[in-house]
Amino acid sequence: MITTDFIQSVRWEKDHIILLDQQKLPHQTDFLKLTTIESVWESIHSLQVRGAPAIGIAAAFGLALWATKFQGDSVEDFKKELKNQKDYLATSRPTAVNLFWAIERVENAAASAQTVEAARDAVVKEALLIQKEDEEVCRSIGEYGLSLLKDGDTVLTHCNAGGIATARYGTALAPFYIAKEKGMSLSAFATETRPVLQGSRLTAWELERIGIDVTLITDNMAAHVLKNKKISAIIVGTDRIAANGDTANKIGTLGLAVLAKTFDIPFYVASPLSTIDLAVPTGDDIPIEERSPDEVTHLNGQRIAAENISIYNPAFDVTPHEYITGIITEKGIISGNFAEELQKIKTN
Ligand SMILES: CSC[C@H]1O[C@H](OP(=O)(O)O)[C@H](O)[C@@H]1O
Image (cartoon, rainbow, N blue to C red; front, side, top):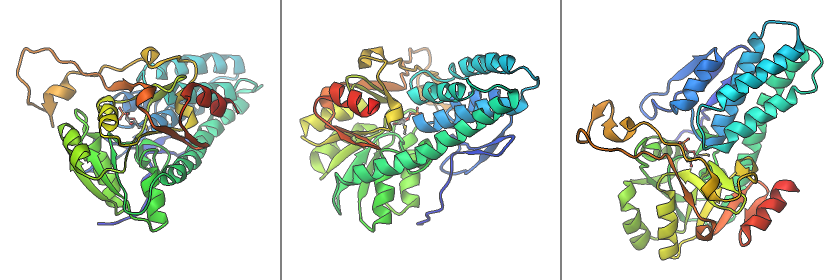
């Protein structure tokens, strides 16, 4: 089935948020009505909304939700409580820098307000602007990403860095959306991405919906596919890029980058500038989220693993910049001296 109706993962509706529950996809397209900042925290923590830019957008709307409910006429009290709410949202997940970047931007937007009403308006306006900008940013990433590809190419991707992980288009998947618009034909291999299955549940679903020929493989098939199939490039998303270009992304990305080097396949990271964190010198400094063992031991609520065993469930790994061919941003493609290029593109 080919359909191009756009599904927005997070939508602001004046006094509530409508959020696509990504944990229910692909068999149920359920939308949640969130009316409290606590429910936004929970939706981020439980991956009902996930993907660095979408997490940032949801958190920004979480502050907007709080702001619309703030009672009181002291703008100082508003700003003090806004910081408390920002710090609360910051505890929902540790790795995707867009969460912290977005709530910081919203707090700063209210800094110069002289009244509660002006501060409230500034918060809502900034959150909406973050979402609007992200759509434009992802489209541009798609155009730059597509410039690396030609008709008939096959791209392997990991996890889901698609439209539902952002405001629209996605980052790693954005080139597919733009290719469809231009009538170009690309195909994809999607890794299932254990344990939360963002690849088999979300990327395969998203690409099939827009008419991209997508082949699903298990994570442990990647080496065989990269060795034996004609893969033009690997393109993945990211949750945080350090100042030297080391990149945190879904667990399993590092292995793909090592394989790409082994089989001489270009390995690209698609990233908005908002996901580049110059405050973090190297990948060693990126906090890696460890999630519940249940994600590894259970499938659809049924335990599949043996009992009484240790479980390790890091949600991300870090790919050293030496394994990255290029970083596709909304301002162009960076390669070579990442430290220098990232500093330049981020500060110009
Ligand atoms: C466009 S950011 C996508 C990025 O986020 C994913 O992580 P999660 O599903 O845990 O939020 C994954 O690392 C993707 O590459």
